[in-house]
Image (cartoon, rainbow, N blue to C red; front, side, top):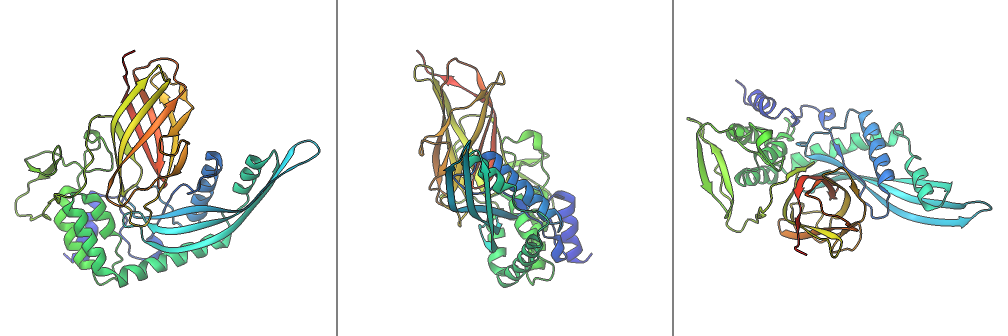
Length: 387
């Protein structure tokens, strides 16, 4: 069998969500949430939804968790004005919407464009922001040109940086991040010289690509179905499970002694809608005398490009379904803000829920966003301080 067809067969059999590119128009992008501190959540959702519609016109949008390419929108305000009218306050805003075509694993930016936006409405700044969010049209030809150029730049980049991409793919595999490695290498176009070398690596790690989603807590981590297992001791409290298959020599899995690992103290269900980011919950403690709950986490940001990511505390609900509304990030004392997270370094990040009037057993759902990646935590027990 031809090695290229073998590569495609392996990818399709084990990880059908990972794209294998045979032509430019097969390259697709995840659309991230706008990266901006002053944008209301409703406006952020509208902009993302419209961008998805715009990319769909070029068949360039995907929701796959294993796709390495993404569009990261950013809003930069040029003008924010509020004036008093006869009856209601009138707001006017003007901004630039920058679209960055990026790789969410290594942080590479392939192409960027800037689109001017504006909006004005009675009702002040918030109304004007909503008008701005609705101001651009998904049918504008600028989005077609953006997709076309981004795809070309991606192909050019992979052609010019073959050896670096192969090295990064091998590094991800040695860390046990087999799906990330297959996603990263699977994005190499067949016309690129290192395509065959990538095919060999993916074929070697293919035994590790079968997943069992019901038995993994953090959903973008890979766990292998157990037939015969060998436990390889890595960092303390960390076990990598390797499936042993005769006559197949897999990529050697060795976690360097200095590789940062996040300690696990709780076992809520954590879902990370993206790659290049790890998060573990260290504790969740409530203090009724101070009327607050503190969720302590450790985050590892693997992006080398964005080492000061924007973090936003989206929402939280009790086990009885009540929404908790007074949310803060401890280091910023606000609901959102930029936090320094050097690439590959564990960083402590605490989230505070205030105005707590009564005890409850657990927080049923928490959602935060880091670097445009949505993180949800379910069934988080609350340990209450003794009064």
